[in-house]
Length: 258
Image (cartoon, rainbow, N blue to C red; front, side):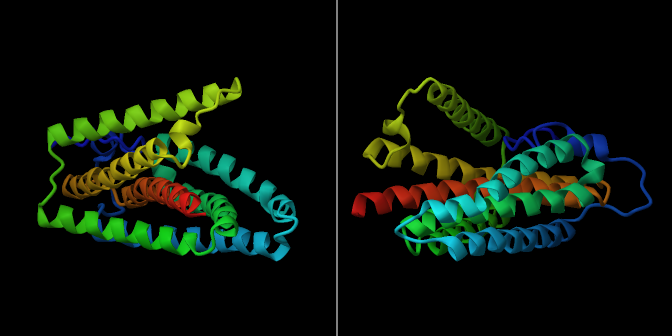
């Protein structure tokens, strides 16, 4: 049973195989992992509510900068803190029970801020993005559980390659932006930009299949119980990515209607 291949960087190494060892603390289960995913999701929502309220508590349509200034520091803390705790969790899974909830707090602060920015521009956008994210999650889970989509070797390699390609595009666009290059054709609300976002959302959704498979295989292999937190953390990484991409896609559609 190969537990080493996933396009999610959290699961992108032989993490479950290396963790399978004698333990007195129990073993990883799918149910336990999903319960911990639910806990992390609640933490994200509570943290997001903080920056959301802080933004709209200071927001004035005539002076939008006031709302932004109220949460900029919190968003920076969330983004940087989330990145650091993600690295710690990835390289030290045994600490996941401690670091994964902290990651959820940081990401919640960031997501609440960025969601508030989009909501201020396009009222009603966030609830649609949240609904679609949960809808996609449930559809992917049903497809996986029913066997309609299987994480075969070729499927894994295709999603890994596609995800790597997207990461490369984002990295190149970031570097290009530092030199003043304009990539609106890719990230704008034109036909090409919307098409690109649709592809990214599709790849993010398919990554959920790989995450489900890795969690299930980890439970079958008898991974230690602390890996439930690690599995929940990895699944949250994909869900957060999916939500952000859906939010951006809906914003592009909304821009075209205005």
